[in-house]
Amino acid sequence: MSETKEYKNYINGEWRDSKDGKTFEDRNPANWDDVVGTFPLSTKEDVEDAVRAAKETYPKWKKVPVPKRAEILRRAAEILLERKEEISRLMTREMGKVLKEARGDVQEAIDTGFYAFGEGRRLFSQNTPSELPNKFALTFRQPMGVWAVITPWNFPSALPSWKIFPAILAGNTVVFKPPSDAPAVAYEFVRALVDAGLPPGVLNLVYGSGSVVGEALITHPDIVGISFTGSSETGMRIAEVAGKQLKKISLELGGKNPQIVMWSADIDLAVDGAIWGAYGTTGQRCTATSRLILHEKIYDEFMHKFIERAKQLKIGYGLDETVEVGPVINESQLKKIMKYVEIGQKEGAHLELGGHRLTEGEYAKGWFFEPTVFTGVTPDMTIAQDEIFGPVLSVFKVSSFEEAIAVANNTRYGLSSSIYTRDVVEAMRAIEELEAGITYINAPTIGAETHLPFGGVKHTGNGHREGGWTAYEIFTEWKTVYIDFSGKLQKAQIDTWEE
Image (cartoon, rainbow, N blue to C red; front, top):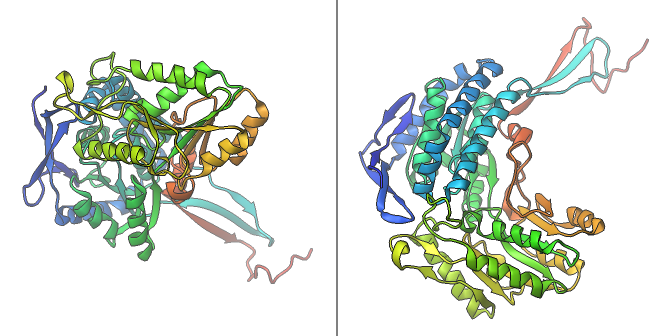
């Protein structure tokens, strides 16, 4: 254990306690006795201060040339690179992700920062000919104002970078509400930007609950947009509230991601993919493989190899480099997973592996749960439809490609999808027919790269795509400009050109 640190909000360039001085604790999910830090339990008044600072700073920040803004993001990315190991170890301690994954999480933020630096010399727009003579038409992007950024705990470095880097590069200012289960990494992310020279008021950090801080942000009249990643239920609430105020919203929500394995697949490769997809981050990813769809011809061989591999996974505290699966985030999530295991059994699915909390020895003070496999699952079962967000995999047996696609698409979500096959026709049909924002061929459902669009369909979001160039479409508005140098009144769609 390390010493407990006291953290503060960051508002208008100052580190501050909450208005009423109340705090909450951030604890290690692998050892609940280990208090990582204490954080401000912020009030509506703290949010008001943060929004006011962002609003007052916005007119100055949007006038800073975009390449100059980009220089600050480059320096922030370099600082994150220098502090990568320190932040990674803190991440493992506060939210349980094994150290190799934590390093990847921080690296994703670094890569996103360097990408944003390059985008500062692009942010391309389009010019087009006018239909009238001596008239010029062009477009360019403009910032919007103050954005609220609300992120989850499972990617506490990567996801803030996906939102905050493009938002401030575009010229917006931000009020950032990090998750209460991973607030310390959010501090390190903000500190990197502060140390890189980001002016006061551009980025403001306010810790606290969703019911107070989150609600104050989504209802605040001076917030022009909300970028949120989290549950579909919370996303629907945000959409309802923000829609009444005509705020712009970007929602990245739940997933129930399928991996299909056809009879022609490389079975060992597909097993590797399913293990990583189902149990990476202890299944606590919106892109996690939660449904495994196997062709009947390879079902027995695949399941034998998969179960043997899953049994060998080493569970424990992720700072041990040999550990492959860490704890779930907290007691509430553990109880939710246990409840779904109970529901799966009651509805007739067969518990093939796992299904229990680990409590002995090194597991006694943490929230550890066995990698779990259900077979005999049908598409209408609760465990086949609900996002469990834990190390629980539902397995289906199918007899054809068409049936596999039908099972895969039988969900209200549509984030990621995967198919293992050596048949190019099946691969191409899957690309076309799978109802998902992301499709992997001969790779698992997790592994998105920072320079490509990320997002889903159906209840997975509201259509925006984070990552790469598409993120900048979220945080900007288009402006169209007409320059008429004809010296006379010309009327578009009415006047016709004559030589």
